[in-house]
Image 1 (cartoon, helix red, strand yellow):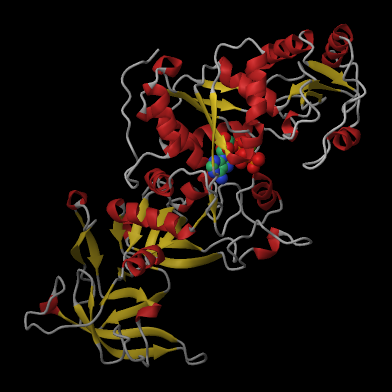
Image 2 (tube, rainbow, N blue to C red; image 1 turned 135 degrees about the vertical axis):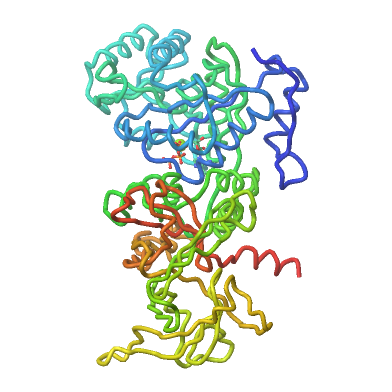
Length: 572
Ligand code: ATP
Ligand code: MG
């Protein structure tokens, strides 16, 4: 048991520890649980983890780390009808990717089915649980409402022996699904509806992904969760606010059964993020009905989606730290998440030049067949990233957007007769424009270069107002680039009014696929998920399905930073 002095650390961006850490620190100081801190992250394997889960993961694993304690990973697999091993594996991969480690403490609520069953019999023997024959509809009617007390089940006074016999026969599969339940015998008049004789076991004749057909009765979440916590020696059971009403029930089970300890349930507000849906049911619908390419579609707020989009674990951890932990429900602006990834990638992503919408430029006075290697800086924020050589030749591509035949005022980039700098190369001047005779579209530019400006400065001191990125046509590699935008066009897609579906709020332009992009050759063999900044364009990463003969890049974020502007604006 680890009892060393805890290091109480507060997150970088808040001045004092949040209320969860304050409670934990007080408990440690008071010597509760012999000073131990043991938390757990309890996902239900019925979907992929999303950014909201990241907050819970950072909190649970973070608190354990900071107090020299432990954090378990426990699958809350009590509902075999919705669960799948695919999710069990994906969840583990995502937590590891985020940077957290449960070491050898991977558990499943289903590991405890045998013990939970014994606990249920113990309640029956104490006269604190009974088998109820009410149908689900009747049970609902008997439960009462917030303003009306409930009514006792006709089976509430069943003798212990009969309850025991019926419960054993439920377990043996003698009764049909939905025909009977085991209920805790608490108080049908309680103002807290969760205490009105809640169901603790139900009949489900569905095989379980781990226990197979061994069980046809399954414990309810409220019963299984607190007991699993207690069996694992959890000291602080951190959960989201919707469990506040279940707190008394959590304590009731632990107080009425012989358990090795009594964890403290602490509730915090779940993270809400605008422009996304986070309900697993809705995320599953997006996947199953084909609105996205899968759980890891780069537009999804899942960790798998964010990873494929190019988000880094550090940026997600930073985001979770910045939003903090509170009791009050709030909605976080997604631009903060975007800010965090830009901030991290700015420090770490290699710079390259890539042309998304190419326009061919022939440098008329540059010698044919000559290739020069230009020195380019890999990351101005990180000198240790070094430099690379980028080939330059007579025919290059520039961004279509970097040329205007009739430049509007304040447009300083290339135009007929105008001179600009090519990054790391030369000044060029536009001397001719070739158009498609039919459409009139500009298809090629002719320029001249000034050999004395190699490296990007004119010895005579003349200035240009723009610096363009470019790639050498003969050396460029072709790539597909996926430009992603928000999946939903409205701030709160999950809060649809009666008669509407969140599907209606999908942004029809959330994915733009650009093919025929021209990238500098250094990106050719980069492994999947390598991060880049395409100069002047944004942050991109190599897609999971990219191959050297079919390069695919995903845009993580554009360079434009609305959050920084908002922050600056609020300072001003
Ligand atoms: P569902 O959407 O299926 O009801 P859930 O989002 O609660 O499920 P779980 O797998 O039960 O998903 O969640 C695991 C843990 O993550 C729980 O402790 C839950 O409280 C926490 N969690 C889930 N969503 C959020 C969120 N948006 N913010 C913070 N914590 C969350
Ligand atoms: Mg849940």
